[in-house]
Length: 330
Image 1 (tube, rainbow, N blue to C red):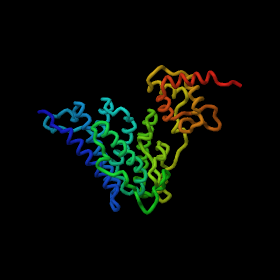
Image 2: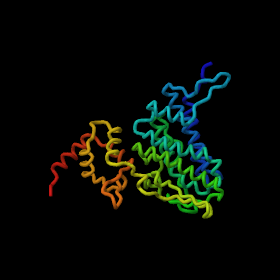
Image 3: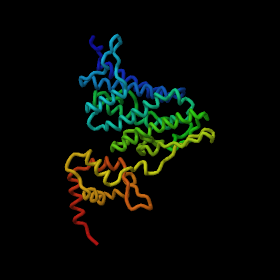
Image 4: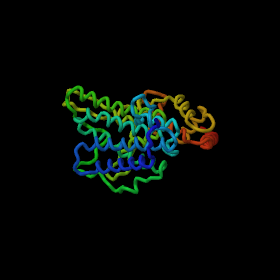
């Protein structure tokens, strides 16, 4: 028995409808269970879009049929894996970063039933949702020539009685130890997805973006913004706070250079290439890329540094070498 026929056009249409419904639900002035319903629709939109991508490339979206059982379509995680392994992410988009964003929302969806008492958790998931809509628009436009902006206005603002929450949040959850543990595990999963993407040198701005009251993109979020300290005794308070750079800048110079050479196209870079480009661009003074403890002589480097150095061409490094050679000497 052949697998059921699935229309690519219908998958794309239903995916767009799910994403538009998610935006509409989130922007309703009075809506209970808002975050949960929105995330469910967003995740569904991506699952349909990824399956449409696989169908468009001639790949199956079903598992092998079992005897006396109906065909089962693949899960979201399998769809993400097959799109990545098939090289089906559109060229300018960072597949690992988009995957981390989608998996973060999927994790929230899967845990929603356990997190119903975690008031304020929506402030944590909002940056992922905001960036997800932008990622989705770029993906659908590149893959299917369908622009989400044609069906909605981009002038919607999350107006409310209080200002948007900052990254550093104080949330109150049920004092029950199980509930505190659930919140802790959820934050840990978000950090794991982000750490993996950051370690791969992915575009962290594609995972979560924080906006100010004017909706101007202010910064990109890293896993350092999602560290949670749980205190079961202090009124069940959960504190999100920034962590030390040891977690955000995990690479030595040698490890950084190895990762850059793995990712970039062109000649293999040497330690001298790394030193002269760091000198020319003053990378060690940029905390996005480099961090040094006050008692240490060496610097630690971030996933952003991997991405930046990988994006430079051989000509960029050759120019830095030439300028370094001509520099005035003491």
